[in-house]
Length: 525
Image (cartoon, rainbow, N blue to C red):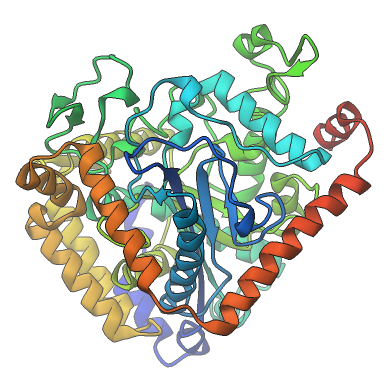
């Protein structure tokens, strides 16, 4: 981590910001939320039906789409200045969606890990129509099935998007005396945030992990070190987020990628290498076999989105533009936090308290000095995450910090103390401090974490993982159906759905180029 004597404390940094334009600009942070959830039947089985027509086109709708499976819905809010605004909009999306699902006697699964799955054939890959961009999205998902299997792709989570506004960047750059290119400054500061996030993201896994159990069908009879729970459930007694473990998104194949998060040029270069370097086992699968595509290409990654990371630097790309090219051309525009489980006890998977905490945590990551991550520290980061997802609630758990081990609880308390100082600079300092106090209680008492509450509810109700989550799904569905919808917003959502269907039809009329040619041009960028 370099010479620590050269690093400023967060107290020193905040003191230097007091009363400046930077502090004022921190009152205008931006956030958005993306949330996934499986459509299921009344018995908790994944559905095989089409994405509901009343919701519009999954290809062209900006707020309600699908992820990997046809049944895996994704809800996307616009960018807002306050978490409460994003959550209100997310609630409206869920109420709109619940009306469509109720007609089909379907429910939205409110947990990250799926319920019972009857094998690979039980999962229908998402379809996006006959346009070339729709075919590309479908073939990419076919490739994921060939490479990793379909089951892993049915995991759901929350993505939290975060960015300060432009006035912050201008003030912060001036405050630091940086006279260089603003685009490069933005990107460098975002990567500073990302490095600190990676060092400390284990804390979010402990505080918000909500997947300590799963249905035995998910692992297909393999011995994965879990214990038997009620019925066909498997549990990790001290686990926080099996979704983020080697059973879920921590993929062994991708561990060889060695994507560098230290700065934008190296990040882009390492991703560019991955999307242009063939892998022997993927070449053996074949790309187009008997006239049908199995994958977009045989490279380490088909496209950048295939790389699973707990945080991503992002920029809105032009239509048809590769994300890595958008980043390199325009710089980082925001970060996307990807390690948050759905809290199955909450109707939309998270609440304002959690959102305020994530906001202050990310602001802390941005303002705190952030040395370059060495190869050695990168290994510590991976080991710390692996320890917390599997044994985060184990008494006395120790993590690796610099050259020494430290108790997870003690380290968490140090971080929370620094977050309290940052909270004074947040748009809603009171809400931020209240969230930090609530999280301090979880650090002191692990029974207050969502992961512990899931196991406790299974035990108290005497039900399996699938039975518990299905009970909650029905409860949340009724909540969404009973919730008042803003009349004007309802009309807008109905119009948006109808327009998205017309937009897909228009794309299918316009994109007449043979798909082979379209794909070749896309990959040749």
